[in-house]
Image (tube, rainbow, N blue to C red; front, top):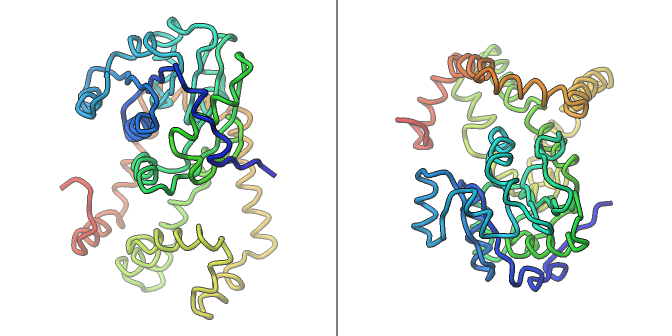
Length: 331
């Protein structure tokens, strides 16, 4: 069983006298920087000279280049995108690191696959929120907090765990509870969630309903377009995946728990498919493929996205969401 940490486990005294650089002021960066500041932590923001740096200045932060922010701090939260982080790290972060500095990642990806070439005399920590940046900020303000996976990847100082827990408290995740993990585990779970095929499963189910005679609008409302998913997710969070089933009709209960089960043969086949996904994550095949895709300028990603946006259901979906007042995409 994993250890779950709460407020009493983190002591902010371990941040006294330290300055934290938040590197990248996007959704996560802006939320974490504000939460840290509100917890009494000295914060400096590092970002490229763009609208995000200006946003940080408007929010009252000392906003600098990434290199200058690293020079002014001794604890560095890396909130850059996975794709650019290794290059920025080598150019603007690593040259300014000193013994007993700390690096903090919110995604284990670049650590797990060895893309961050950090010196052995710095701590490497992980505080990985399991929610989006707006929720990181909102739940800090309302006192509820948000869940995270946290861990110590490399303890150079001998005090890395104390610092990890202090940062976790200051950011706000210990208000809810943070689960002890590793960069490798976070990477596996995160990539597997993204690659297990959920979006295609929903669309496939809608396609089959349309083939059976349902309108595309009715099919999409049934599976995702109504917003019911967010309501069900909230109930699951409070009652558990199968514990929430009693809040549905008996017909729904029977359909979901009994009829919805795969046959033993189909269950075994699906598990084999999912294990193939996991194997490619664990053996580095996906990371190699993704690196080559980035170097080539994302041709496969662009092509497949164009195919998906050109799917017959997509234009109907946009019209449906517009007509119902849900649409928040491009006008």
